[in-house]
Amino acid sequence: MPTVGAETRGPAAAEGIMRAVVRALQWGLDRMLSVGYGVVYDAIFERFPPYQNLQAEVLELVEKSAPDAPRRDVHVLDVGCGPGNFTFVLAEAGFSTIGLEAYGALVELAREKRRAKRLANLAFRHGELAEGAGGRDGSFDVVVSIHGLYVHPEPLTLLREARRVLKPGGCAVFVNPTRHVGHWSTFRDIKNRDGLRAAMASLLWLVPNSIFEIARKRIGPHYWDEHEFATNLKAAGLTVLGTRRTFLNGASVLVWARRDVEAS
Image 1 (cartoon, rainbow, N blue to C red):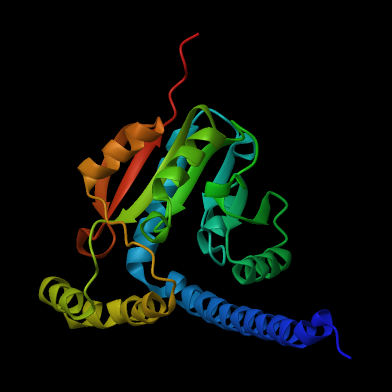
Image 2: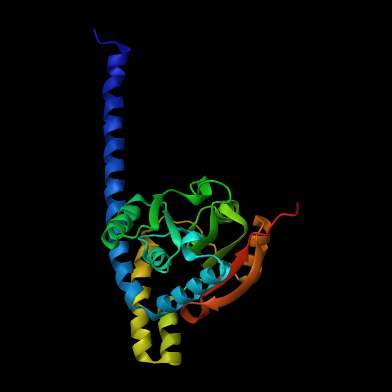
C-alpha cells in the first residue's frame, strides 16, 4: 500500500525537474544574450564616435580625480562594466581597476579578454554593488558607472553604495540617460545636423540597443536630468563637482561628484 510520502514524491520530483529545466533554459538564454551583447558591444565600442568621445570625457575626469597620485596607486571601480570595454581603457591608462558586473556570462567574457591582454592591474568581479559586492568601506579612489543607473532596480541604493566604497575625498563619474532615445527621431536629428553618413553610423548603436532594450528585464527606466541627478546624489552623501550633456545629441548627462571628507 503506497504511503502519503510516496504519493507526493512523484509530483514533487517532477516539479523539481521542471524547475531545473527552466533554470537551465534561463541560463542558456542569459548566456546567449550576454555573448551576443558582448560581441556587438565590442564592434560598437571601436567604431562608434559617440562612444569614443564619451570614453575620452570619462577618462579625463578619472584623471582629474587623483591628479597627484601615481596611476598604479589609484584604485578605480567600474560598476556594471559589461564585457569590460571601458574597464580595459582605465587599466591600459595605468589605473588599478576592478570591473564589477552582475551578469556572470559577461564577467566570463571580460576575464577571457583580460587573459589575452595580460593586464596585471585589472580584475573582474561577479556581483551587484547595491548588494555590497563593492567590498570594504573606502576601498576606491574613483567609482565609474556608465549607463547603468537607468536600468537598475534600486538606483538610489547603488548611489549610496558607491559613496560607501569611496575613500573620503574620492570621486565618482556617472553617466545616465536623461530621456528615451527614439531610434528614428535620433537618426533624423543626426542626419539634419551632421549629414546622412553620421546618421547611418548611428544605426550601429541604435539598432542593437533597441534589441537589447526589448530583451532585457523590464526595470525602470530611471531617466534623470541634471537637477534630479544632483538631488539624488546629495541624498546619497555625494557633492556634485560638475555636469555636462553628452552622448547622442546630449541624450545623457555626465556627472562628476565627490565624497566629502567628514569633519573630525
